[in-house]
Each structure stands twice: as C-alpha cells, then as structure tokens.
Length: 449
Image (cartoon, rainbow, N blue to C red; front, side):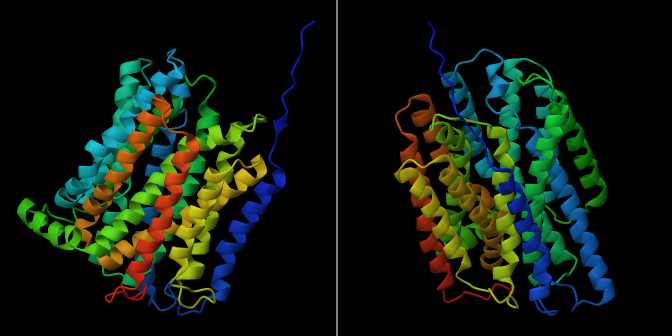
C-alpha cells in the first residue's frame, strides 16, 4: 500500500500587501504636510521659470531611467530556468552563473573609467546597445548565444550602476539647478527604478506562456525598449562632456580617489551593499524552502521590492532639515539594522514568517541606503571621477561574489549561513566607515552640496 505524503503549503496573508502599499502611500504623500515650504525638497523657493526648467529636466531623466530599468528587469526574469530548458544540471548552471560576476569583475570594474573619460552619454548609449544585442541573442534558442547574452547583461548592469547617475549630476550642474535638489533626484531615481522592476515582472508575466522559460517575447520587448532608449538619448541628450585626456584623468583619479581615505570608506560602504544584495538574491529562495513547506516564491518578489520602496519613501523624512525626524545618524543606523537582520538569519533558522520579516527589513534599509550613498558621493568627490570610483568599488564585491559562486554554489565548500554572516559583517563594518565620514573635519551638511 502506497503512502501519500502531503506537503503543507505556506501562504503569505493578502493583508501584508495592502499594509505595505498603504505604508508607502502614507509615507510618500504625507511628507509635504510635515515639512516647511522652504524645504530643499520643495520648489516653492524657485521662481516659476526655474521650477519649470528643473521639473522638465527631472521628468525627462526619470523617463529614460525608468525605461532603462524596465529593459534590465526583462533580461533577468527567468533566472536559472533559462538554462534548465537546455538540460543542464544545477552544478553546470552555477558554473555558468559564475560568468556574471567574473565579467563584472574583469570588465565592469573598468567601465566607470571609460564613462568618465568618454562621457556618461556614451556609456548610457552603450548600455542600450548591450541590452539590444542581449535581447536579440536570447531570442535564438541556442545555449552559446544565451551565455554570451548573459555576459552582455553583466556589463550593462555594471554600466547602469553609475552612467545615468553621472550624467544626471553633469546635466544638473550644467543647467545651473540648485545643488541641494540633487538629493531629491537621487531618491526619485531609486524609487522609479524599483517601480520599474515591478513593472518589468508584470510585463514578463503577460508575455510569458511557457513556464519552462522558452518564450522569447520578454527578450524581444527588452530589445525594442533598448532601441527606444537609444533613440531618446541620441535625440534629447546634448553632448554635455568632452572626452578627457587620459593623463589628466589619471592625475585627478589618483588625488581624489586613491589618496583620499574618505573615498576608500565610501567605496567600502558601496561594495558592502552591492555584495549583500547580490547574496540575498542568491540565497533567499533556498533559505525559505529549507522550512520544508511549499511556498509560492513568485508572490514574494513584490513584497521585497515593496519593502525597498518603503525605505526609499522614508528617505526624505530623515534627510530634509525641516522634517521633525531629521538626523545625520540615519545612514549609520540603516547599515546597522540591515547587518543585524542578516545576522539573525545567519545565526539560526527562522520560521518563514519571521524570515520574511527580516528580509523585508533588510530591503527597506537598502532602499534608504542607496540614495544616501549617492548623496555622499556628491559631497566628497568631483563628478569627473564618479563612474570610476563606483565601478572600482564594485570590484571587491564582485570578486567575493565570484568566490561564493565557485566555492559555495559549485563546490559546496561554504554553507549558506556562513555566506550570509559575511554579508552581515560587511554591512556592520560599513557603519564604522559612515561614522568616520560623519566625524571628518571636512564634513559638510547634507544640503551644503
């Protein structure tokens, strides 16, 4: 007589989505009522012409940035399912996935230097071209093409981390907008990026008819959006920066980045958040499924991105000097909370509900940290070396991710809890880096940019 083993299915309460949405809505739309009219996050101190000029600039930037975010999101919808249809084993897929951090390490680390020397406009155009080629290659159901496309996407992801931000600051300064409004644009860019990632998943679900990942329609749409982004940049963006001489850039990069301890501390903070978020996306599903119960993982992705959006909407509450919650210690606290959340996950097994709560807290902190780091970059270094600093700071993180993929996912030599503990340690050490920046003699107010 056969024994039938019934597996229990765990479902997240629908009220969690409503609560998260209402929290984001309340945080976003109630902030203007608690800040003064002279807030740097408002336009009331502008004259009419200046306000219209800034809003036109900001909306154009957010449009193309959202388009680029959706394009990147569509390229990564299938994950390992994209390779399972070729009959590859898990170990083979892990080895192929190692190509992504390897390409980011050996090519992406120097992409920022290319952007600084040739100009962020060309880097943004290259981003669109890489996604165009990647989308076309993925439409062909052939493993070598998919592998090459993954390498293109890895380079494009490295470019995305700095090229649009660098271009925004360059144009912002060129058009003479108020410097303290850069912070406002930073958190809006992060906000629209997160919303665009959710939108890309919705589009992918509408276009996907094959659960095995064989439908090329999302990749075809990504290629089309890449063409639209390329044409928009060519038409709307001026050639705002001439190419720099290599010797001049080398001198500037050496003095402003390599010889400045504050930039090293800022780079470590940037590397730690990049490493921890990458590790999260590698380990979150195995951590939840280790409970033994069935979980619809596709329903959890919006919860994580929504938590990140909540953290982004909280950002102006702590960075606006007119807010009752303004604090210069907020970034240090965010790193500490994120590190403690991952520490609790690494230390001991958690029930699914508690595990999801810790994951959501981590993502809320990430949403707060990202625009904060962009603000610090503007405070402590010139824009002409921004791309190189960001891409080079990603190098140690990508090297660590490559080590995790080879030693942990492929050779099974490192357990998941140890990897999560390293991520937590990196975040906690970033608290010291941010605290050092705060105590620096040259420390400025957040809005004296």
